[in-house]
Length: 250
Ligand SMILES: [Zn+2]
Ligand SMILES: [Zn+2]
Image 1 (cartoon, rainbow, N blue to C red):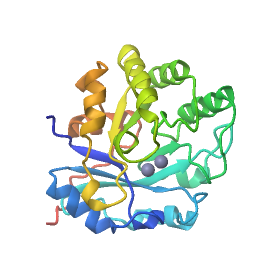
Image 2: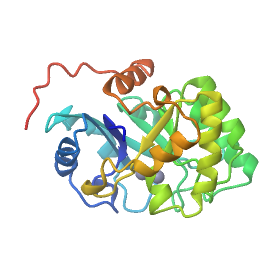
Image 3: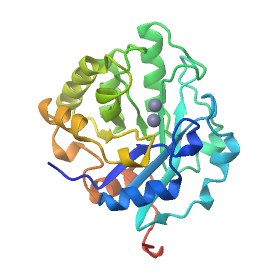
Image 4: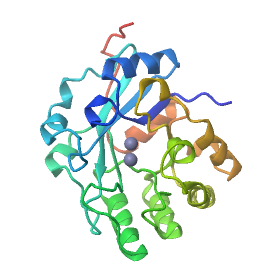
């Protein structure tokens, strides 16, 4: 089994329905041998999610905790079929990691396949967005061929979400399989995430990795397998911060 360098989609208790502190999450990531942790709290439109002030103040979170590089960002909610997100541009622009996705009870309960597809494409085309999460969610049907083509063209990551295959968003497997096959064919960048809502679940990526491999996705397409892969993707997105000056704490 391949060992991942980072899990770039996780939630701390700030998300309102997740249960570990940022420090507990970082320590768990370190114990699992990860060097990067993406903390992507749900955007403000989701019930229980933090106010936008939370995202505006994320710079106080140290760049490294327990020796793990922390990308403290957001999993923004797509709030309409124009692909608008629930954080102001000025805040999104200074976050080191911005994922976005469709969520029930967060402003957009889904439209026609065409409307959802248009929203997803606009999100991928948004220069402030680093990746589209759980696109296989059956509640928001998409034209996967179009969405994955745009992701490949723009070099934006499409996520295969381990939790979608194991605990939530029932019925995602068939869609995720189609998405993974298209990503393999079109060579789109792929993000494999746990979507952990509890520290112990960080780094649980086996089901998503198995699906990626089964569908022909090559290791060099998976952005978070190696630290070099993560750093290359961050650099391409204009977001690679020098981590050298921060001293690791154990
Ligand atoms: Zn989500
Ligand atoms: Zn999430």
